[in-house]
Image (cartoon, rainbow, N blue to C red; front, side, top):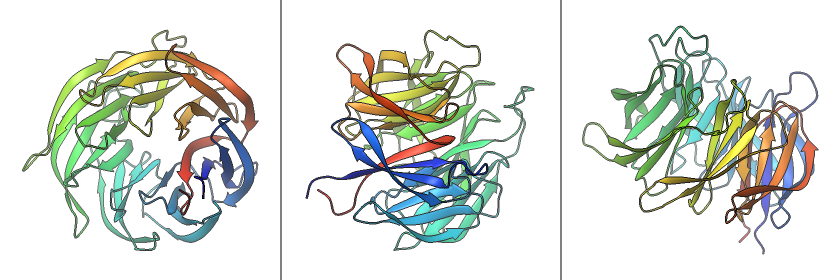
Length: 354
């Protein structure tokens, strides 16, 4: 059986123009999505897939919703869970799919829930509210938790707060699922740290700032009481040409082989592509080019790494590009497709395919 891939796109559904999650068959060779169906989820704002590839999770008005990914790519609803908080904006599972971490932009809360063996969502194990003040700027003056992940060594949970310009560092109890604050990475005022990702080997962290339009590269080492972080590189602008004063970095993704990193920029409406050295962790800019859409809230990298899809929230579209790494180009390879207010996209290898 050949590898089969599906794409799942989360959209707002409040205006009745979308049901929540749109399901697509992925044509990897042509770099294109083919519409299959929609699944009802109230205002799906962010999606993630379990590390074993069997379960899809979505932020929703009711909290979080879980789906079993069938062998044909169809979704079967498992359950939903209330996070006892305002709507989340980001979710992530840990390496062994034992917990899911929900980040709350509106109330500045990070919530931890246990996951069951079948992938369904269990009970809340902990929840912490951030406190403090940022600057006088409207977007960065109070806690807005934007991203939370367990570190690859499993010992800590990092929580980005773009409202108070900090990464809170918590020790994590793997049995009870509890968070204990042990340190904080204090960022530049009004920089708005939004998203971060770790390399698979756990040696490097890539931190993207929404307002500052910067990516910082850190080395990561496990510590007894606190982790050891050292900044080794700063990408001074995710949109070097800066065509708009309203430019804001939206999302970062890494290629499957981790040799490339991608960053989307709203306002500028572009995607930056970087070559990543897996030994040093350092980034080299290859290009920053327009994506033929408005507000690329997310980007999806195809399994062949030769194509990417820009998830254009503002223009209700997904645009497709072939990536020419040698010449530093994004070449539009298909017509854009329409989808109502898309927020997030994950491409998943269907369970059972090889």
